[in-house]
Amino acid sequence: MKRILHIIEKKSDFKRIGQGESESLAWVLTSEDETAEFVAFHKTKNDYSWVGGKILGIRDATQEEMTERWPLERTVRRVIHFRVLPEYRKEGRVRWAGNQTHGMAYKSLEIEE
Image (cartoon, rainbow, N blue to C red; front, top):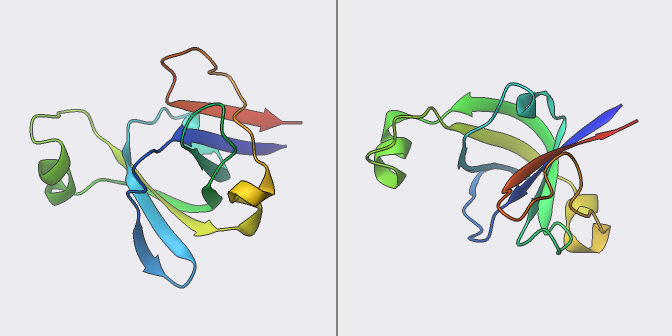
């Protein structure tokens, strides 16, 4: 079973932390979201993913990261550390899928059997 977390990310707000590795913007994730093995970032739900890959870890955003972006936010946000994989780039043709397809969804967990 393969679990892919699809996320709308329009700003390309990533931090490179090593050769082929990045961290994403901080997200509000459920415990089910955090079971994903892979992440695919999309500009819109109608677009193929433009970057993504194998999730290496998920951590709480630091106080500094929270203050910089969301000074009034009290919800714990999580940062996704991932290894970029070519099959998650636009050419890889990873489409939005999963349990959240409504208009306001910004993330969705896909479970491939």
